[in-house]
Image 1 (cartoon, helix red, strand yellow):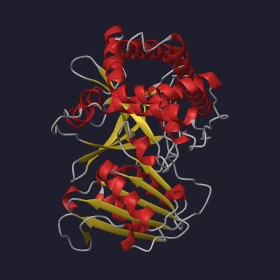
Image 2: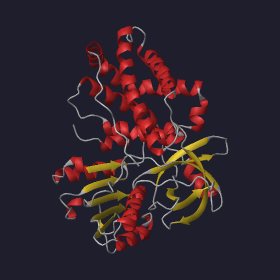
Image 3: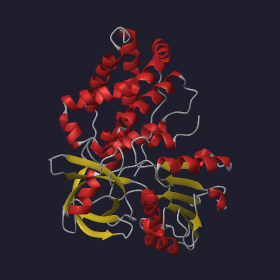
Image 4: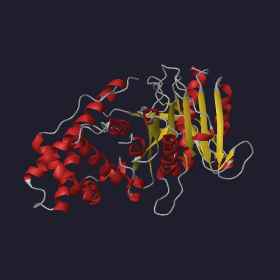
Amino acid sequence: MTRAVLRGAPELAPQHAETVRATLPLIAANIDRVTRTFYAGLFAAHPELRRDLFNRGNQAEGSQPRALAASVATYATYLVDPALPHPDELLARIGHKHASLGVTAGQYQVVHDHLFAAIVEVLGADVVTAPVAEAWDAVYWLMADALIDLEKQLYVAAGVEPGDVFRRVRVADRADDPAGAAVFTVVSADPAAPLPDFLPGQYISVGVTLPDGARQLRQYSLVNAGGDGRLAFAVKRVDPVAGCPAGEVSTHLHARVGVGDDLQITLPFGDLTVDTATDTPLVLISAGIGITPMIGVLEHLAAHTPDRPVQILHADRAPGTHPLRDRMRALAGRLGHATLDLWYAEPADGAHHGTLDPAAVALAPDAEIYLCGPVGFLDDVRARLAAAGVDPRRVHCEQFTPTDWQARAHPM
């Protein structure tokens, strides 16, 4: 699959840049209120979007509104100060997510209308004068047009019309891991339309219809090598915690889906992928269910380049909570130049005790480093890598929340 690229450097007209620069602090200070108002208005006018497209769990917990707020503010900040790093990682992250959800160009107008109505409602018409509205309208459409162009490239590369990414599949196998993750392997329900190959590190969206009739979509990393018309993904049941509901889709998949059942999935997308055309050493660092994209990378290496050097570092609470632990060990054993280091919060034989520390391992100086796990884990590991003098351009981060671009952005 060809990686989509962003074209050109966006520019605001000088008068718009001056207005955005002057009003950015006010917008930033109120952006959370704006986005809450925006989503309330959007879902009131289009309840089908909340029911069938947006993640209701992220909406309830608040991470989706924060993601929108952060992305708009970051893009606007770049536009008024082009000396800052280009937000290409932010746009790529959003673009691949949108493609995985089947977003099309026409939906950007719907978002625009409700977003600007929310800005006026929160800040007042006396603040959002015609010049202010015109300047921020330019910001929105520069960002939207960049995303629309990127998503068009992704659809072309996938060989489909915009939005035509949903496929009906059948569960060919289900394996329940002792640590609580279920691995589903699916094949096309239509023999005339086999499932495509993918790059190591990519994901699919899985859609399920819930008891209240809602069609909810969630993204899951692919954990197989690919190339045989089969896609495998691992699902950890998301239990309710303070302030956050139980995972609707993960609970449904664990409780109701088995071999022979049909599912709706999307074609594979995801921008955080391993370059398969080189033999550069890899360092894979994960925690908890963040192991899943690493398993996909290891499966690809075992099948295609088993002599590529790879260092595997994983952190968990204990061996019994370590998802896909046996599979990780087996894959490391199939590779000619792989090392495996484990960290557990609870003492365990053959593992480090405590917090994962990359300094405890002699990392290859020219390695590409991939991280996946909770926000706090990523922040800590990135800080440790920076303290060790690792070039941040060699560090690539993924986490399973709408705000993961913040962890992946290079320091300014």
